[in-house]
Image (tube, rainbow, N blue to C red):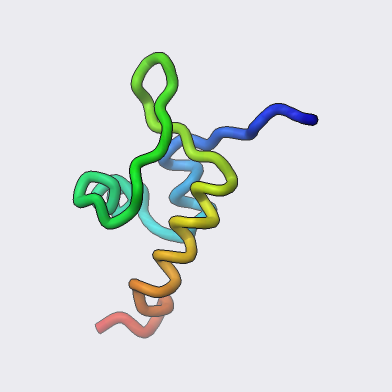
Length: 68
């Protein structure tokens, strides 16, 4: 088996399709479950975390171009 791939908050936000600050706010407001952290206490996102948060984003934000 290969090693687990980890993403930074900024990388995960790009994959999800949202701004990094939006992802951070969702985590702080507990709208999405917290992710693991490395030894320096930086958040690290797995592919499963990205999929889970993307699913939340797809159901909670309007598609681009349809915001008022």
